[in-house]
Each structure stands twice: as structure tokens, then as C-alpha cells.
Length: 454
Image 1 (cartoon, one colour):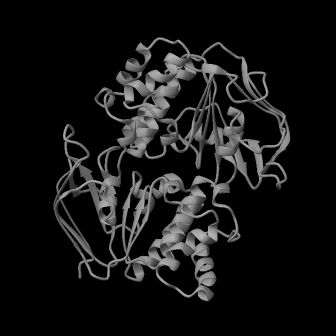
Image 2 (tube, helix red, strand yellow):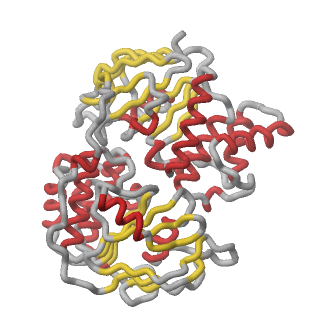
Image 3 (cartoon, one colour):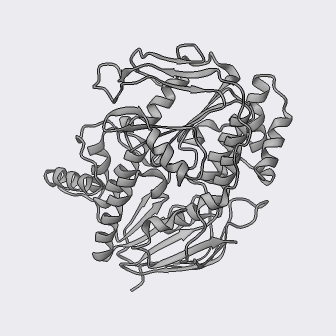
């Protein structure tokens, strides 16, 4: 029995652009797990939206949907799916639309939360959750109405290792119950035990993917910062403190002094909800409702707007940093603002081999492409301090290699770089790791040695 079938699908976003999906075919049956891999910007997320029945533009071709088909979708940026202010209300939204009796909702909502590893109050505001926690929340919001087809966009990038392990268990149980799963994933090996059909989306068509071991990112990145900058100016200094929001319990304790100098690269590693994004935004001076903390950035207490072009912040949601009509004008915006050479914009596009996107709207790009364009707009400024919140999320191996190259070049020029991640980064040469685990922020000297040796 077919749940959904695509036949001869053609789809594109504009008359002046080539088709993203070109004579594409796919059949999904109950209990099957399909994993779709492919380069950044190849149309994977668009394909998921087509399966979900919510493409914003018309397409050509035939789509068969079983009369009983019920689809759940978790998008790459879960923030765009949030409809309610509290966790409980968000999950109950689908039940309300299905006419489920109110007295049975609480139990269903709590069960759905437990399945995805979220043990939090139903009254918890959604806005206080990390991006990874929101991904789990949106997964719970889909599971609560028992879909027959579940669509997942880049789950590995949004979840920490424990979250990936829990998700594997949840998905296995769903498959055993006959639920079909289609996931888009740059790291299919994380779900290899579940996948029945591995596809490569390339040239607008689905081709059978190769199951042999793909080259690791580390094998594609052959770059080393051979010459470190002689700058040793301290750009970040963090004294021992309790990191807390006003009138709230500490998010974590920092019991030792931490510092970052120009020319150094430090990776901030921790699980979903540990406080990584909050710390980065605090250093940039944009975190609201934060207590007075003993933190200095370039010898100043962090404050919005006082660093000019010397500080750059890449947020987890790159679309919040993009607002110009073309990629080129996006990169030129801050250069004009700070009276810096406009030629830097074209140079960085050339270095990243992204000249073809120069006249494209950044708002029509894929999540991964938006991420790298937002990063490029900061790199143009040649800052003294660059704060990167999960900079490799949504990128294929080739784009990861390009970002690594840019990071190493900036470091060699004297830029201090602090980047966050759910896990260690064996493909990137870092000076140190800072770890947030079990409510403590500390220098992770041991993990640095282990990764460097490996």
C-alpha cells in the first residue's frame, strides 16, 4: 500500500533559475525509512515541503496521497513552526484541531514530551528553550497526533549526541508501528540502522545513494594555519561567576577564569539548552534580561553597538541577519556602514566559490546557504573577534571545508574566534575547548589533547 507517490515532478522558484526538482520520482510505503542526502541548496527541504503538501509555488507532475495519509513535519528551523507561547499549548494545538476531548489532552501531551526526552513543565515558555530543545518540542507536537508519515529536516545538526540517540529509539518504535519516515540529512550515518532507502538528490533527481563509507569532513579539509598571528591581545575575559538571567536560577557556574586572545580559536561545546547561545549573545552585548556578570570583551563590558566592525556574531537563525535584496548587496551593507572597501564582498564570494549567488535573493536560499552568506557578511569586516553559533549546521562537507578555510585564514590574520557546537570538531584545528556540562563551564584541556592527537 502506497502512502504517497511522486511521479515526474518539476519544480523551481523562478523563471530565471533552473528547476530544483526535475522529473523526480519517489514512492513511500508504510514502515519505510527514506533518507535524502545531497549538496547544500540542492532542493532537499523543498522536496519535504512538497511531500507535506505545503509548497508555496505550483509544480508540475502527479502526487498520489493515500486517503488516510496524515503528515507531520519538523523543519530545519523549528522557530518558524512555533504557534503558541507555552510548551503545553504548542503540543495541544494539533489535538484541538482534531477535536480531541480536553480532559484527555494533558496525558497525551506529557507522553509526547517524554518520548522526545523533554522533561519540562507544560507551562514553560517556548522562548526560553534552546534551538535543539525547540526541535524536540516540534517533534513532540507532530507525534502527539500520530502521523502516518513523519518528515524530518536535518535532525542531527540540531540535536546533541544524547538527543540523536533518543531520536533513533523514537524513530525505530515508529517504524515498527508502521509509520513511514522521510528525513533530509547531511550525516546519514547517524541514522544508518534505520534507513531502508538512501537517496542522493542531485540535478533535480533522486538517485540511489552509496552505502559505503563516505569521506569524513576531516578527510576533505586539508588546511592548517601554518602561521599564527603575533597578536596576543586579550579579546574575551571571563572571571568566575554564576551565569544567570535576572531573578532565575543559574544556568551554569564558571569556577575558573577563561580568556580568548586574538589569533586563537576556541570551541564552546555543550548539549542542547546548556547555555551556549546565551553566552555568545552576552559576549556580543545583545542578550536581554541578563545579570551583571564579570565579563570583558576587548576590555569593555559587553554592550550593543560599541565595538563597530571589530566584533561579528553569527546567530543560529541566519535569516534574522539577512535583509537586503541580493547576496552581493547583503555583503556590502556593513562594508558601506563602516566605510570599508566594497571589493571585499566580491573577494569573499570568489573565495567561497559563490559568485553564482551574487544576484540571488538571500531570502530564497536554503538554510545552509543562508548560513554561509550570513557568515561571509561578517568575514568581510575582518573583525578582531568573531562569535559563531553552530556555524556548520545545515552545511554539506564541501561548504564545511570552505567555512573551515575562512576560519583558519581569519585566525592567521589575528581574529579571535569563539564558536559553539554540540560536539567536538575533529576537522577543525582549535586551540582549546570550553565545555558546558552538568551545569559547569570549564576549560576542556583534555578533550583538546584527545582531538588533536586523533
